[in-house]
Image (cartoon, rainbow, N blue to C red; front, side, top):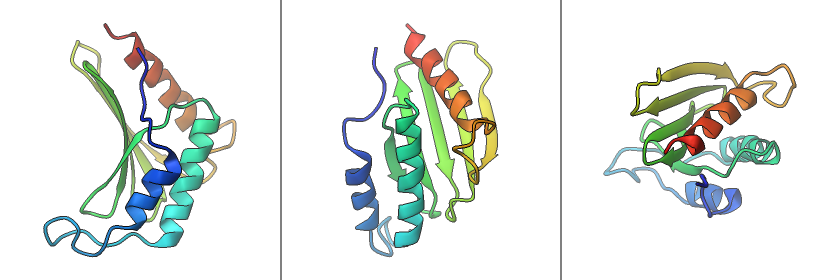
Length: 130
């Protein structure tokens, strides 16, 4: 089983950048170009580290959500609206303990940063799920 999105990071970032104020039934604000540039760099770093391209979604609160899912497992990485912290959430429907951890985005590419290894571990588990 494979996991990930066939739409490129660049195309998904372009779609986010095209959103106007009020895009979500009157709620939701347009994303700042600097925010999109930061998150694009992070996603490019993740994919260069072997992480599959996620499905990327806006939230009405201004956050950016990345998701990888299988029929029995869901992994989400939610960046706050300033791209300072990321919340890693994993939910399986077969008795595994859920994961809900927060990471600082600064230093994400450093070998000692825990987000990429943890994300990779969760995605490997998701693909192994029957």
